[in-house]
Image (cartoon, rainbow, N blue to C red; front, side, top):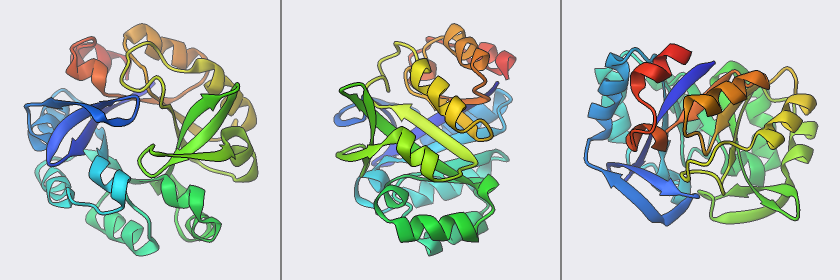
Length: 239
């Protein structure tokens, strides 16, 4: 299992949301850059960053902070939030971003999705498929988890061959009650060759081991770190 520590940035600060709700955010005192250095010093080599302001409105207002992390650390970065153009993807890859995470635009614009699948090496692209369960069906969300679509997560995955899938159950995000393994099992069955990245609800090493047992190869851990539910040494040991 590869553990990817997370930094969510809102108004230039490290925050964590509760169930994707922007009105329920916890601000952590440490700066995003200093937090990135803590992760690097702890031995992690891949960092997950979300520009929450970008996710909400499509404008990347925190890019200068992200630039400072790129320049001041040697970590590979997986970056999402408000990336909604081909030029934007190219710019980030040129900056040295290892993986560009796409959500809203691939869900709302099939033409854009087609271009992404044909123009880029898919090892550098992550599809962020955030979902909420309604009547036992996982429906995708967009616009920084603010817009509920009628697109079934499983139908989307069946239709497109995607190398990296970051799937997050928004109802579990930030609540530290464990990940949605039942959905992940179905994704594994439908897309056995995809790299499935678990996210949302991870609160313990046990949760990570549970994901590993169902062949999830990577997972993003955020709030459990900031709330000291898991220490970095233990996380590094499961890498």
